[in-house]
Length: 246
Image (tube, rainbow, N blue to C red; front, side, top):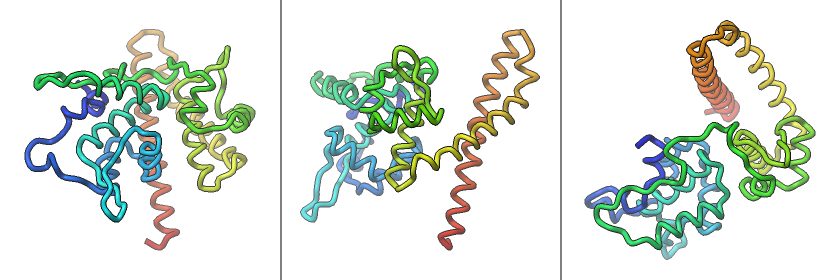
């Protein structure tokens, strides 16, 4: 089983053995566990998933959340389904409810979210407009403006690919911190410059007609994207650390 499948396993199958089975963790400890695989996860995201009924941590007398390993397994299931399949929360909730309604046998194999064994190519994913809005929390006005700005593109008859869902999710998150949509033009311009640079690097492979060269071009593109993301994150992190005097 690959990483995505392991992350979305059945809650009972992912719980550690021994004394840790009964251990309860704070929301900060849960965040530390999840960020290794889901670096964009925040405390606000965990609270939102709780509000949506996807996880139900215990509460201390003082009102602090305490999570079990079963709760962490549920969160991994939800985050994997969102990241790899772009499923709306209602579908993920239905999958969890179906898992819970099935009898658990001692030797029961790990369950994974439908399709999680192999992450789909974002360009092959088709998400209806209504589901994009439900999945991301974006309003129709925001979605329309993002289309006008060229940040996302609707495909006839009104669906979006997986990358569009990621973009809208990020935009909604940024606007919650006060960023205005007009500020996003800088992100668009920077990504266009990066695409132009990478296109030049990939051109020698793209010009070749054999399938092996095309495969190498695709793999090189993925590596360039990953390296670019790491560079960008590190530069922003270092810049903010400097600004905050840390």
